[in-house]
Amino acid sequence: MKEHSIVLPRDIPLWEDAKPYLDVRNNDEHTLVAYGLARALLEQTPGADESTVLPAILLHDVGWKRVDPNLLLDAIGTNPTRKDLVFDHERYGVEIASEILTRHRPDDVNIKSVLEIIDGHDTTKEARSINDAVVKDADKGWRTTPHGMKIICGWYDWSIAEYLDAMEKVAVPHMLTPAGKALASCLVAARRAEAALPDYLEERAHD
Ligand SMILES: [Fe+2]
Ligand SMILES: [Fe+2]
Image 1: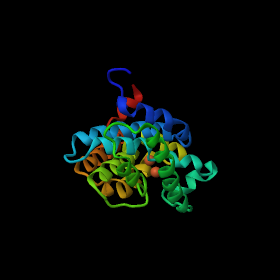
Image 2: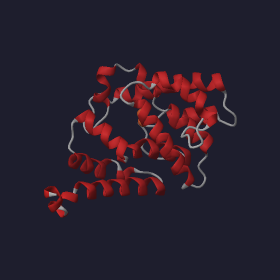
Image 3: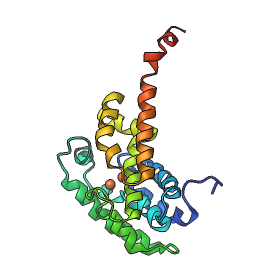
Image 4: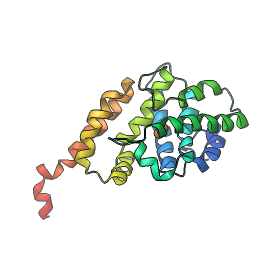
């Protein structure tokens, strides 16, 4: 692997086995960016354990593969009509992740702790542990990253202004760790400033 690879050597076999389950709704890209985010959040979050957080973020969304792809966008977004599918993807995710983890039994990874985080990662909102908080912040914080914004605005055809309003209401206030809160509020603020550049630099349009 390259020196600056995102996924730790321990987690590469998990990633290889997870990949076939993540080829729906950009979940493969979401997973890798959220994994990178989780590594950064771990550095800023005392007490969180990477050997639980990183396998959990890598495997948290594998269950979407068993949900009808035509219904995926009805399960999420600002007005979800199929919240039952969110529970389903968690339940399926625990089954698939359990199979992958027991096949590899990665060193020093507590499989039960990882599965407990995957189960309920979307349908519980509070931090059930510091590890759960970091996984949730990496997962939800992804929506405020440049990558998450680009992907999600494409799914729903939202303008960036509508999207940033939604993020300020539903994402920023619900981040659970100090690092997660800083991440989300700073990224939304930076994107808002970027969107406002033409208001201050109108002469650039005539260059
Ligand atoms: Fe999920
Ligand atoms: Fe996710």
